[in-house]
Every structure is written in structure tokens, then in C-alpha cells.
Image (cartoon, rainbow, N blue to C red; front, side, top):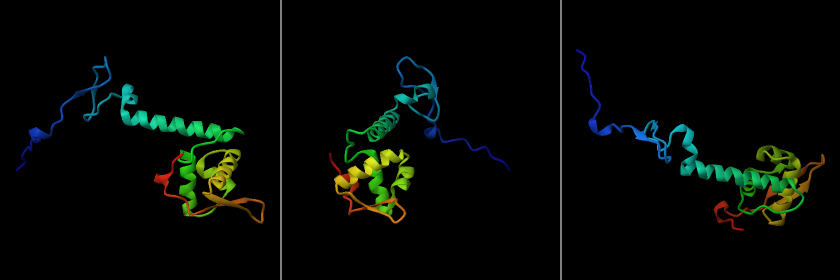
Length: 141
């Protein structure tokens, strides 16, 4: 015998309208914004701001002047990688998705901040090693 099981009346979320001012589109699954206005969501705005900071840091590293913050994205990522082991400058460039020139500048900053040491390898590569890096959360400018 087949029975129809009805959903519990208290679990239905109902439709919700987009929170963007002037938009009356329904959203799916109780989301606060419709797809065209998803960039209004605080989380999305935070992610977009972080991406913009990363791009700005990469531009600074490409230039011959300026410095990135010690607690910036690239310094933190470099520290994270160096906790796993040593890297060549080229490998670090690849892992951080920055140019070789930018990686060399970052390495110089990391050495200046005493976060890393660099050595010349037998084949001419530069080897970077972490120097008991501080906790990532404790980094301040």
C-alpha cells in the first residue's frame, strides 16, 4: 500500500524577495539576493575586497618600489608554504601565481622581515627556507 507523505508545515521556507532596493524578484532556497544582485551580499563584498587587495599587492611586487604589508595575502601565503618546506624562487613564483620578478621581491622582503633565509643552490637557483615563522594570525604591520 502506498501512502503519500506530506512535508511538515513548519519546514517550508516559502518564497523570499531579493533584498536589493527596487528588486522584487523571488530568490531560491531562501537566499537574500537574486543572481543579478548577488554582489550586494556582505560575504561577496568581502571576497571582492580581498581579491582587490591581492591584485594591489601583486602590482606592488611587480614594481621596483613600495612594500606590501607583513600580514598581507602574499606574505601570509609565502609563510604558509615555507612551513611545509623549502622552495626555489621559481617554485614559489608558481605556487603564489606571481611573476618570477615579483617572487624575488617578495623573497627579499621576507628575508628583511626575518621570516625566511635564502641560499644559492648548486644549479644557480635560489632556495628559500622559513625561519621559525610567527603565527600567521599574530602578524601585524
